[in-house]
Image 1 (tube, rainbow, N blue to C red):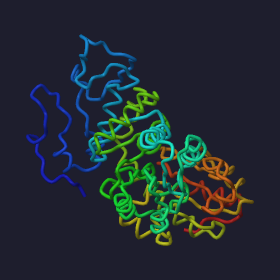
Image 2 (image 1 turned 60 degrees about the vertical axis):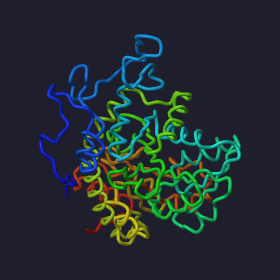
Image 3 (image 1 turned 135 degrees about the horizontal axis):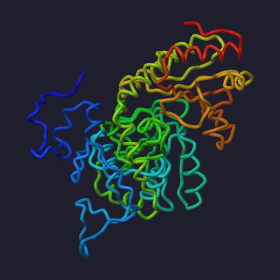
Image 4 (image 1 turned 45 degrees about the horizontal axis):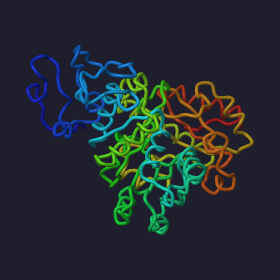
Length: 419
């Protein structure tokens, strides 16, 4: 159902010259996500009228006089800002419904910038115990050496999360659905805990994005995205983003980004902008196919637990229904580790790779890939065993994906998925 309340050609903010400013915030509040993905924060190029944002492939910008810039956005050097990157940031912020966004070379660069900005030696972080393995390494192995303390906790357990707070806690960092087990934590309740403790609340929303899970309505202070995944969606770039409604925090984050040189490149920003235009459509298709596959796998006698928020058997099903608009395009399932290698090697359409959120279906073995540096005993306790596979369901025809999975299961264990 469209969220556009009332609109006519006269109400659209076009000028007589045929160019237009970005759609004002008060107008975007009535627009649906697909419209926002195409238009939010964007306008035809003022120099040429180009509908698509140009790729400003330049390192530096001429300055007409001391203390003055040609660009009203103040661009001087592309390590600090660039018009193509700024367009992406405005688009992401508009889609999220907040005032500020910053784009980075990678998702991990975005997380690094956040941590370096809000933490100092002696500060404490409460982090979800099931999150992206790179975030775990960054907190535990790198920042730990600089005196930052971290407690990894089951953030689906509100009491345990609250008990982990200390007077020195400065950040609550969660990821939901969690990578790779899809565990769901209650964002609204966690937001209340963070606010009561005066702790910054950051949510890695890479799996669903604001299209399927708005996080600021639940009290988040910062949304974190790996734009490498669904946002760009075509395996063409790496990138990350931090989104916030706090202008002072955004200013501090921008300073850290400039100091560390982690801004996204113009070409990657342009490709990401192009990908966003179909983000809601793609996410809907990913989710529909993922639900169908999850149901099929759940019926197979040789498949163990299937982890997918859209399944009624999933422990977080009701909560997912409350805070997500769909189950998303990621699922995880368990096989006997003895047949797992043969199963993966027998897939023809689905590719073994360390990524997700692309048009192509990708399968990952977290224990040996994304989460390999987590100690085996810890992985096992967290449900990331040797038999767990994470499937990023792509945009191929669902019948073809089902046949691929069926064929691999027949080869690996001699039985077919029962519809």
